[in-house]
Image 1 (cartoon, rainbow over the protein chains, first blue to last red):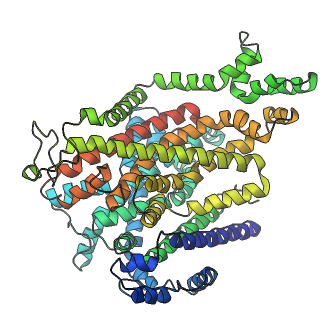
Image 2 (image 1 turned 90 degrees about the horizontal axis):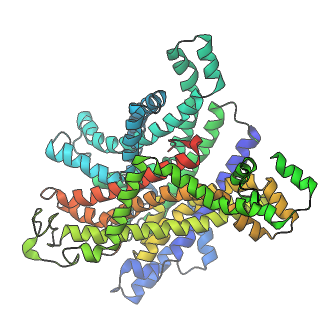
Image 3 (image 1 turned 180 degrees about the horizontal axis):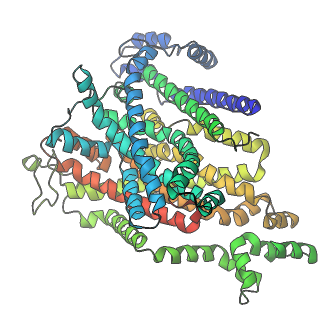
Amino acid sequence: MYAFIAKRLLSAAVTLFAVLTLIFVLVRIVPGDPAQVILGDQASAEAIAQLRERLGLDQPIIVQYGAFLANLVTGDFGNSLVTGAPVLREVLAVLPYTLELAGAALLIGSIIGIPLGVWAALRRNRATDYWVRILTLTGLSFPAFTSGILLLLIFSIQLQWFPVISNQGSGFADHIRGLALPAINLGIIMAAFIARVARSSMLDVLSQDYVRTAMAKGVSTRAVIYRHALRNALIPIVTVIGLYFGVQIGNSVLTEIVFNRPGLGKLIVGALNQRDYTMLQGLIVIYAFIVVIVNLVTDLTYGLIDPRVQYS
Amino acid sequence: MSTTDETLAGRPLRESDADAWTNHESAERSRFDPDSSGSAIALSEGVAGTMRRVGRALATKPVTLASLAIFGLIVLCAVAAPLLSPHDPLEQNIFESLKGPSADYLLGTDYYGRDILSRLLYGAQTSLWIGFIATLGAMVIGTMIGLVAGYYGGKLDLVIMQAMDVLLAFPALILGLIIVAMLGPSLTNLIIAIGLGAVPTFARVARAPTLAAREREYVLACRALGYSDTRIMFLHILPNIMTDVLVMGSLWLATAIRVEASLAFIGLGVKPPAPSWGGMIREGFENILDSTWLVLWPSLAILLVVFTLNLIGDSLRDVVDPKLRGEA
């Protein structure tokens, strides 16, 4: 068990290191001089030289690489080229919004998705199952920005139940009203995904011998489902939610843009538009870091909740 | 497979024997089928037989047939866009700005007075082309990586799969975003950006069955015959894992089209004024309060394509691997 954790930690560390190296290389293979790109065509030679020095671009590449890693280890992600503020501070300022959105979406996704998937599995190949499958496939087919725009059109513009621009007003009620639509948007896509996993996982468990034995013993269907089947069916769901995290990040970027909501997604798109390369680099590092950690945690939890998993 | 063992022990191996076992399913079937006694027949049944079986199973499902028909129609519309478009997709007409649907402009016009229907048709070209090429490229490269990793195993496998993990650490949209932002939004860069995100997925899909195949009798027989590793991998193992790869391919095509649209929506699509569905939604979103249809038509187009593709991929998976039925 400990050997497995150690091995998995080592693998995550190697991945993270490689990811950082890849980002370093990517940022530096940009065609043209970054200083020139940042300052534009009108910039004077002195200004460019000055910026190159400030960014450390005049140093040998290996020194730059060393400095890059050393800074990251100490939590120094550089300063934004636009605002001049430390990247990490800007990220931490909007991170709660993104986490709040992701958390609310996960909640909505689980509350709708798990019962829907279990229900479909229990009525396999009947009309209910058929409709759930079509419905969930539709949910998965929506690019997050399309579904977001549709929600915005219907509930904010036509019915005016929710604000068009999320996160206006200061009270708790306003806060929830601002969070509702973006969270529902992410949540229904997530629910579609969870429902499909829950369905197949439940079908798998229902076909196992121990469920048949319980049925044969005369245990009520309800007890078999709740006490025996559902518990085991939940195991793969947790893993798959973890693996889905990457897609969720992409969707949250799109959702934040549509609902004009602060968060990592708006930060990264803003950095793109303003050619804020240090901010971009910092955000990519943070995204990759989060994904690697989530994958690690998912792998480890899988072992914790399923004692049958053999660590080798 | 008892017959395989007997044959291995009983008589010297011939090239055709290994070929017959290449597709274990058809080899297994041919044992019970008195008509297909020759191994050459078993081989011809191999890949083609599997494809026929898949085709037959798909043809019996009305939903699958309908989605195949719809997708075919969309591809046809994209290919025939120059013939079908009532207007030039780039032609601006300031007097016809933001008009609703009319006889002349069936789906209305956008802010610059351009015909939405024509832009939708040409936009289909962009979306499908980027989706197809990115998926195909990722499929070829990823499958080769997975084959090599699974076949050789050991340290090479470890290093390759670690590298794939590194790529997987970037969410598809974020990876696309970085690459397009760095290299600039051109058709080629979009294809690279979207395809690269899919390579690890295909590598994983190809690796797992290759690992299993490595220990199977037909591969051992090929080895015993002194076949080269390349020949075993591509002529013998590849046909067996092809169905898995193709199922993933059809599902990834849907994802690729969705990612392309998302990048275009963020502003990293093909350069305007070239039409793309995501770009049309981006432009329409700016005028959303007075002209809803600008956003609605391209949204419906994306939804229709991605949905039919998902449906096709889903049915394909059901046929190929009933165990996985309905898994997302």
